[in-house]
Amino acid sequence: MKYLTILFCFLGIAILNSCDGFLDRQPLDQLSQNTFFKNKQDIEQGLIPTYLRYRSQVIGGMGAGNGSSMDLEALSDNAYSSSGFQSLQNIAQGGMTASTGGAVTTMWNDAWQGVAYCNFFLDNLEREEVKKLLSEADYKQIKGEALFNRCYFYFLLIQQYGNIPLVVNAVTAEMPYMNLPRDPVSKIVSQLLSDIDLAIEGLPLKVYTTGHAVKGSAILLKTRILIYDKQYAEAATTAYSLIGDAKNPHKLSDDYAGIFFGNQINNPEIMFSVWYSSPDDMHQFDQYTGSRMSCYPLFDLVKAYEEKSPGVKDPRLGMTIFMVGDPWEMYNGTSTKTFQYTTWNTETGKQDKILDPTIYTYSTKQFPPRDGSPRTSEGNIPVSSLAWKKGVNKSLVQARDKISAQHRVLMRYADLLLLYAEAMFESGQGNDPRALKALNDVRGRKGVEMPPKTGLTREIIRNERRVELAYEGIRYYDIKRWDIAKDVIPLKIPNPMLSKGIVCKWDGNLWPIPQNVMNIMLPAGWENNAPY
Image (cartoon, rainbow, N blue to C red; front, side, top):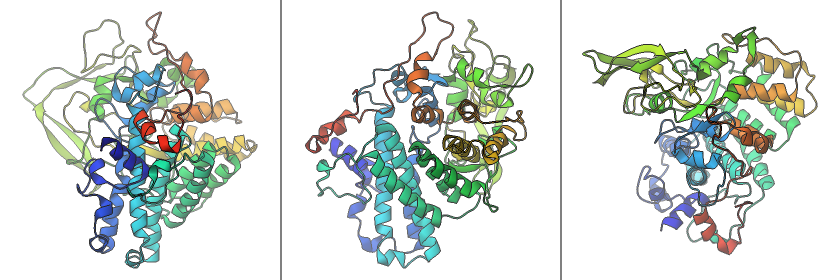
């Protein structure tokens, strides 16, 4: 039954007792159609599970176990993980196999479960008795959201595993699923582009405010798919359909740090994120990232930040990484005063003050180097003397339990602008002033105000993406699609203080399909991705 559970989720069979017991222990495909989707509210509730798997530890989860989805950065040349979280350390060091587990298995299972929820919902949405419950506009929007979500999960799958089955309907156990072939990526990309066009048509053009995908979300996803497929001219056209739209509701935020903590409500730069809210739906990102520090940035990333003026680094460095000497909140023992922290309530759009029942006292000290200093946090200061600051509420790094509620940003407008600049350059339009403006707009945002570039090169564009999007889980996919991971990963130095540090290796741009799935799919003649 365990193998069937794994397989059903990956093929799109909607069996809820295999997927965290969400909503009910009864298989969705056994629910009576007479008791499902009886009104618009039922349909909207049925849409919710299509968003569920964004909370996966390797997709968009925050502070789960001993890390967050942002720690996927450790698989790039920006960072390293010293913990066993999702086997990121093992993957980074090379020698990955179909039995490695961790992220290799979690991504496969969770992304396929996301596809499963979307397929089941879309099948039911197409029933005539369901469609008549919605206006045409509501039908297109709700369908657009489900299609966006399915495209997002499928896009993750092809980036990690390459050729996979193309399944666009809910599968039943009676179907000959073990004979499904691995369809080529080109076929899947064609389907995704068709689906995402329908999503763009149906989704509203507005600021992202509710946790539900909007038109901008779909346009950015389509741009990502096109640029991954090296359809650069088409990617540029798609990106500019929003960038150049006089009604474009998205813009760069004046508060770079606030995008990730403190200024997320109705932020016009955020185009899609995984929502959390206080007090019932919180996480431990601040504790695990700001205290345990098991995922930490590398000096090579620090060097990528240019100088704003002689001796003055790009301000984004100080908003992304804790450096030696930075102010640092540290736990000093007990006190008679109860610590009080403030967080956002996403339903009211206002701040809630919540009392922490544990008694703490905090003082501001300097972030110390790794020089034999005594233990100063839940975990030791990482060997690189660097720690992630982006998104971290410093006042909560020593607190306990689930006390954080910032959202996990998966898409934002700066990414679209930089993708547009890249697509223009790669399609031979790098001299177009609009392309240069897009990159300089990102560099010139208020509070950053880096000197503008006078021209575009591939190196300039790629470095700008590296520093602007650091610790957002994007660099890993960038170095894969640029096909430079094989060159930069072996140069990673996780421990610069040891003469013989840890060696990182690159096993290839594709992950192996988990072995338990390969065993089941023997009748279909599947062969795993080389060299696994």
